[in-house]
Amino acid sequence: MSWNVNGIRAVLRKGFLDILTAEKPDILCLQEIKISQADQLKAQFDFPEYREVWFSAQKRGYSGTATLIHNSLTPRLFGFTNGLKQKKIDIEGRLQTLEFDRFYLVNSYFPNSRHDLSRLDYKQEYNQAVRHLLTKLVKKKPVILTGDLNVAPEAIDLANPKENEGNPGFHPREREDFARLLKAGFIDTFRYLHPETKKYSWWSYKFHARQRNIGWRIDHFCVSQDLKNKLVKAEINDKIMGSDHCPITLSLKI
Image (cartoon, rainbow, N blue to C red; front, side, top):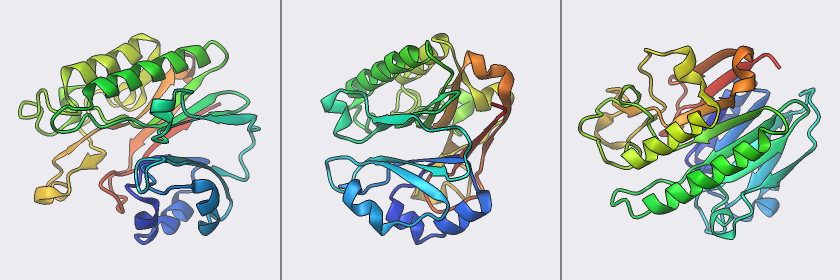
């Protein structure tokens, strides 16, 4: 399961532990945790039956990722690296790479290009760095990429594509980068299994967008081609509340 929680403290006040208990994911990837100095702060959080891997941004209350791994998970965790080994990128705590027996898991919170597109160049630099990492990892074993990629790849992936043409999250350069990821050998699992389904994972807090289901599909699970035949389910859990994003889930036979 993957979820942009838009603040771990905020979502804890909105029933996060109940959701965790009900869903019982083997692995839960979180984005936009918005806590700083996680190595000291993680003692404040108690997730029964899970071990935690934190990666906070240097800026307080901003960005950050975390991964919760169920104690009963049978694959052995060899280790993890935080980030892309690029200081300008890593200071925002945007990416975790975890290695298991049979696959790599990359949990990432991709940058938002901003309304004025002032971070579009940075977003593309980040996209390229992640592609380079993934293509390097996949030479060793299968790879799962998940997180808030902050891009709706196709018109079917947002409620109002014409009105948003060229806007952040639906800019041609961002969509081209997503297409490059697929050309590099990765599968958009939800779209692969649900080619005609219109379902969204993020809604603006404005104008009652969620109640009206005026949303975007910007949270993704992408897997390397060698996992194609192991796909079971890819779902968007849009009934789960607590953030402006909803969780997404992926089931694999590995």
